[in-house]
Amino acid sequence: MIWFKDYSLDEVNKFNKKTLMEHLDIQITELTDKSIAGTMPVDERTFQPMRLLHGGANCVLAETLASIGSNLIIDPAKEMALGQHIEATHLRPASSGRVRGVAEVIHKGATMHMWSIKIYNEENKLLCDSKMIMAIREKSK
Image (cartoon, rainbow, N blue to C red; front, top):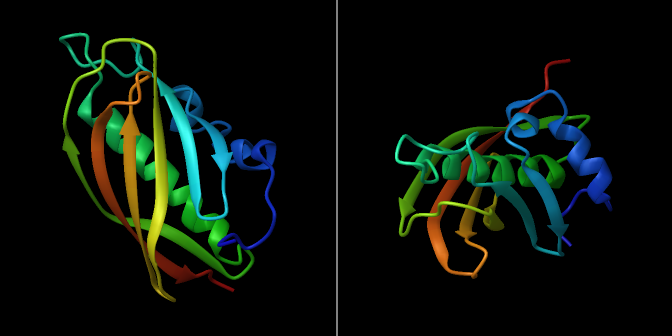
């Protein structure tokens, strides 16, 4: 298991209260030994003008999963994880339902984590392939 401790989904979803993630209804749905998954609606909160899922919303879901994931790996009393770089390749559109993102850490260093995040539609077709780099920093004393 890569996590700092055994977190519950309720505990993890509380991180999203009063944030962009709560506004977009991003829900963390699964923690496995090596990945974190979550969903986001495809609706007026996440549409672009053509009534399709906004590419930036894909990036929000990808960064949310990587950020929460990195912050669950480190000791929260001593360190924090901050987004440093994100890239996303959008492969197909979505116009309704919920999308599901799955993030796996592919490098877990002392000062940097790298994540691979894949976002799927309800038919389990890949919509977006993303990579995120998280900077790991000591908290101020």
